[in-house]
Structures are given as structure tokens and as C-alpha cells.
Image (cartoon, rainbow, N blue to C red):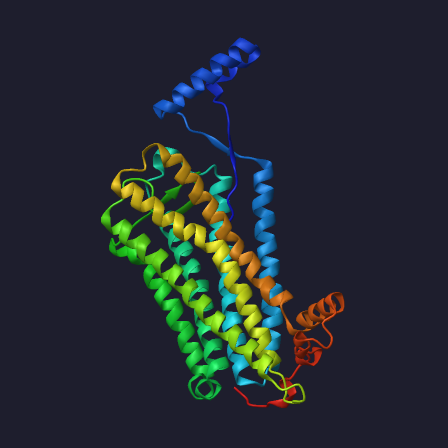
Length: 379
């Protein structure tokens, strides 16, 4: 979504004459602190290392998403199985959304960063750029969470009720579902346009988000509760659906007769493994920001944040940095957890622990070669 880095405060030209001796340096520091406390002096400059970190982070995210988009788009064009094609359509849309959500907010943050950010006294203000950046963060934050939830629910239905899934889930309905997800996320992001919440600059002045730390009102609390509630609910539903799907597949494997020659549903295994990867990545990357936002806005609204304000600012910065990694790591779920990679991992693990002939031996390598040739149901 975006990348944040540290700042170094630069000395004022008015204080440069103090730098000729050690005593002057002490006086300069005292004068600097005094002016800062009065709010008459605020000048931040980006560090070279910080700019490099931002650029490398954006480059890594862009390359990762482009590679994943190519892999998924190619697999979708060649896919003949309806259930797998639906999953690939969801996955491709998710990666494309991650890509756009990494480039647009990241470019705005980099622009703010190179211009020195905004002054601390302006953190509670909001201009057109802040409104757009804050809305982008909310929109591109909710979309992946909603899509991960929808993908988990679709796979749960496909694994537990395949006949019902084949009659309900179609390419057209999948596109309608994606459109609804984007529309709902957009509606939530645009609530501040109707004065139902507000966006403001956040410490260290290089990004915008829902107002959570100062001058919060009831609408701000409601906005954060809505945003965090939708995000955490999506993660919880995805967790339940993926757990049911995984357990169903494991039980089906364990109940299979040793002499049975039925074709293994390797595509189900591959999709569930990828969904678990998406869910784990989303939980690790997004839960801190969703939870810290709730904690911050509640404490701020109740007026009990007090001396802990700096700690909550640090928590929010940590949360958004973790959320940034979601768009970088998501593509690698599809790049690394493909059937060919899973098969190699299985073979290596089997050789290491000697699973041949054991119960786990039912997860044979033949489960992972492409079984797509056996079904030719077009989407």
C-alpha cells in the first residue's frame, strides 16, 4: 500500500553560527528545543537511506505483483475446470488490486516524503491529497480482506458441497461478486465525503488515515469501528471457511481406501493451501493496524490517551508498515504455493521423514501432477 521511513531533523540556518565550538552546539540544541516546543520551528528532511528503503519496497512490490499477475492470467486462460477458473479469477483480481493499491498510495507517500512531509501542527488538518490518500488506504485495505473472505467461502462451498457449488458459482456471478466487493469498499472509503468520519495526516506526517489520535468525535469512532469491524470479520470468516475446507480434505484423504484408484483432487489441495497462505499473511499484516486503530480512537475519544500518545503513534506507524507488506507478500503465495512447488516440497519432506508406507503415504506424489486433463467443463 505504502512505505514509511524515518526522518532526521535538520538544524535551522539561524542557529548555524553556534556550530563553531562545543559550547555553541549546546546552545544550539537548547535553542532548537525551545523553538520546537513553541511550535515556531519544524523542518524535517528525508534521509538518503530512508528514500532508498521506500524505493526498494515499491520496486519489490511492483515486481512481485507483475510476476504473480502473469502466472495467474496465464493459468486462467489455460484453465478448463470451472471451480479452478473461478478461483483464478478471484486471485487475479486480488493481485491486480494489490498492485494498484501498492503503486498509487505508495507514490503519494513518496511524494510527501521527498517534500519533507507536513508539520506536526498540521497533522489534524486535511487537504485534497490527504483525503485521496486516506480513502485509498481504506479502499485498498478492505478490498483484499473482502476478496480473501469471498475466496475462502467459495472454496469451502466447493469442497463441502460440490454439486451446489457447480450450480451456484458461475463466471458471471463471480464478476458480480467482485464488483460488489469493490463497490462496498469504495462506499466505506468515501464516507468522510459525507462528513461521516474524517481523514487526517498521521505521524510522521507522510501518510493519511482515519482520525484516531486527537480531536476525535463520535463519527470518527463509528468510522474506525466500521473499518476495523469489517476487516476483522472478514479475517474471522476466512479462518472458519479455510479450517472447514482443510479438515474436509484431510478427512477425505484419510477415509480413502488404500486400494482406491480415484483421481485425487489436487486442484482442491492447491487452492486451499494458497488460501491458507493468504489468510495467514492477511492476519499477520492487517490485524495490528485494525486493532491499534480501534484502541487508539477509543482511548482518544474517552480522553484517556494522555501521556501514552507517543506510544499510540508508534503503534499506528508499526501497524501501517506491516499492512504495507501484505501487498508485497500476497503475490508470493501464488508464486511459491503452486502445484509443482507443492509436489517438490512433498517429495523432499517424504524423503526426509520416511513417510513411505505410512498413513501420510496416502498423500501420494500423484496427487499433485495436473489433474486438469480429466475434466473439461468450460467456464
